[in-house]
Length: 446
Image 1 (tube, helix red, strand yellow):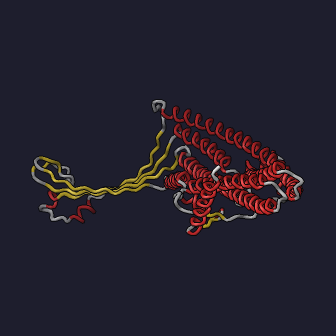
Image 2 (cartoon, rainbow, N blue to C red; image 1 turned 180 degrees about the vertical axis):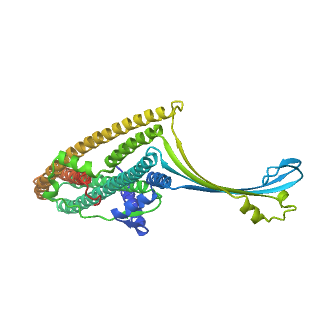
Image 3 (cartoon, rainbow, N blue to C red; image 1 turned 180 degrees about the horizontal axis):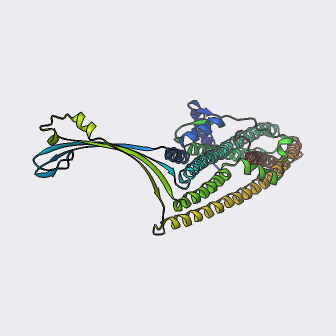
């Protein structure tokens, strides 16, 4: 093995890491989440759908208001035509003006407007929960990636500690070899161990860089942007490691708080209102209206010297109206609308059931995973404590010449692996416990 080559790689990796730190941006978990929420396109799409639902709701409310329109026109007639002010036939060029207005209001239409407003309002509320669901998904993803960076950072520190320990042992061994207390092979074996630890350090640094890249990609920031993350206090107490609630309790709490469930229920309610809107098509509708109309003709003004204002006033007509429309036969359009709306209601009911089934299965898996991770973490702690004692004992024996290098290397590697496993178990439990807390409605944070 070319030890100089390995040393060069380690030096370059550590040097480039130090250079990168100089221009790095340090972010905590909240800042990472905020950046991801600001940049995420899925969330933006959900927000736009919500704004569309808000427009639909405002428009539906406006249907209760009367509509009003003004109209006007100018005409130039040639040859034989009718004077609009006298209705007499004339043969000459005339200029005409007309002006009018109308307004109307729906008095009753089978509660169509009322149910349409309620449906639009319910859809708007559902879209609010869809935005919340998208926000939660992004937040969970960032937390997972953030923890992965912390996990690999601790693995890197563990690899550095292991390398430093091996180097210190190599220095001691060199002195013992020089004094004749240990054979030359002991020094060579430790040189090999140091080289192996240097390779582990390079791999740990590469894994940390990859974890940071994944975090940056989930925030949708350039890979060229150098970041560091704040290390929160993630020490796990026995109380935190204990899942004090049952899986059924977590599920019942989730039914009250998870946005996908609340959205599905609102969409089911919206579909029911859609049925009522469609059924209003078989009801009579009653409308009221009012309007006016007037006109002017220059043919009438010749010889009468009547001004435009006077003609408009003299020719003014007004009306009030009250109408009723009773549907008799509409080529099955209303019947088809009712049938389609009932199918949509059934689909919404199925979706609500599916969301509950998915939530229950997700919570059951998350709960069992957190329980298993808790036990793994506790066992890993006990294993590290035992192997630390074993390593100290073997190290002392090795320094005294009572143990060979194979025993020392085995004890050292076992301890290194156990510490790595403990780090992995800790972060695995933290994330899975965070999932269980999330489904209980607790804030998503570290």
